[in-house]
Length: 239
Image (cartoon, rainbow, N blue to C red; front, side, top):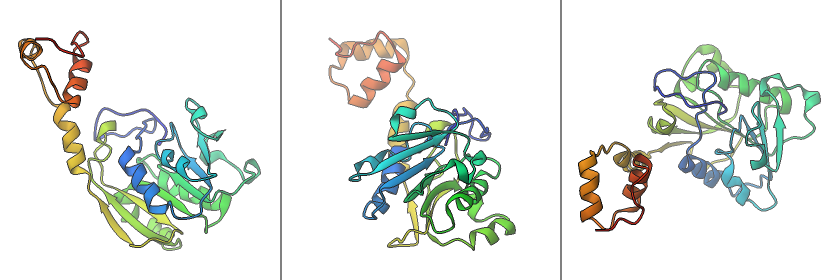
């Protein structure tokens, strides 16, 4: 989702980037890698975090579309434009698969789906990440969603996007894609906890000095944490 990360978990601005974590991208790729999708369109792609694993598909073409072209070189083809302002005359291809992670705020998931259908019809395969409210909210949205062939919904752990300063209930919604099961839950709490364990450590200067003198072998994670927190911390501490 294209924009820069908010530091709060309660206010997601229109201009914030909530990147798709690697384990979520891998889960999405694994769920459809057996399908013959070659031309993959990543809408609101930013740096390509949602579509990065699809480069593994033989003869695949990854097309990025974003209002910001900072990472345009990350894609086989890049369209520098605001997606919601696109017209049919601007598009000369039909993707085999569309990936999108619209902004969580306002009604962007609804607007993105409407625009996709306007441009490519209602049968195009789509994988979209959205807030949980989107598929369980207003009667107008539910009426719209009922017109689509939703084949699977995967609920994400609420801490999935915590790296970007966002704590939110969210789902991966599959449309027009045959799946072995219709409902799933991606529980990454243990992975998140493992990462967080090293990010919440607070060390005093005296503790750092003691570690330098007394502990010659750190875990890789602790080394990385210390080297970021203390610029002068030696990579190979000596006793």
